[in-house]
Length: 304
Image 1 (cartoon, one colour):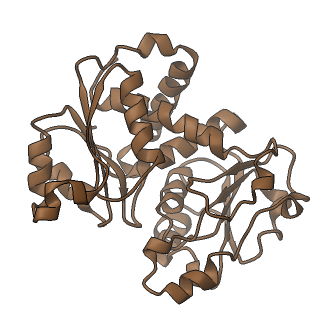
Image 2: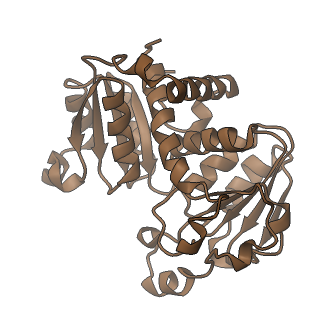
Image 3: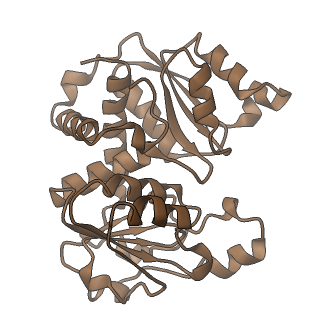
């Protein structure tokens, strides 16, 4: 595997290998502190990011490597009209691997056809976010001890949420995984995800707009924010942004070992009162993101 554009680029075996390496990094960080010495990661973020960009940078630094790049398109030559292809070809001359986020769906795929170094898709529009999915898989594996026999609730923006689409695609490979899809009518999961992933793989799923209705059945509750940047109409955003707010009351019927996840940033869809609940896993999830990205960088650079 030269690039990671979508989670489908990885086999189940490769995902398991990445999780195993990430877990080993967590247990033995000193063994990895110079694995990427003299290597450079370029972070090309044409769209704002906090966690993903800093996670990649922290990952490379902890592997002993260096980081170059930019955090917005306005600070790159694209603001002068340079094409993504030319930017990628240029940056490939200065780096060993590139992590790229772009608001246009498919931009990292195009970049990968022009790049002389490995490309990691760090998010492209409402399409893919494979390293967030790897983060989610590592979180589930560490917290639940398995990736099979799980009922997963996905709540909030299921229409534009790229993390949701990628997680469904990834988890559909595992045995006896069921989904409860919780959203307002306007933000339901796209038909192509239902047809091409859920129904094609005979995955059991329920669609509902009630977050409490199936709470007692969930092993995982994956909350998402309503994404203002994906809306064309601000009225629709304002009407839907507070549709679901997870609080202690809504968790009364939940399992004691429920794992509450969120790709962050959180706006107000999880009340801060939930942060101290032992079932809240979203800040641990952030930490897991660094370790899985370390494992991925090693894999793509073919460093053992």
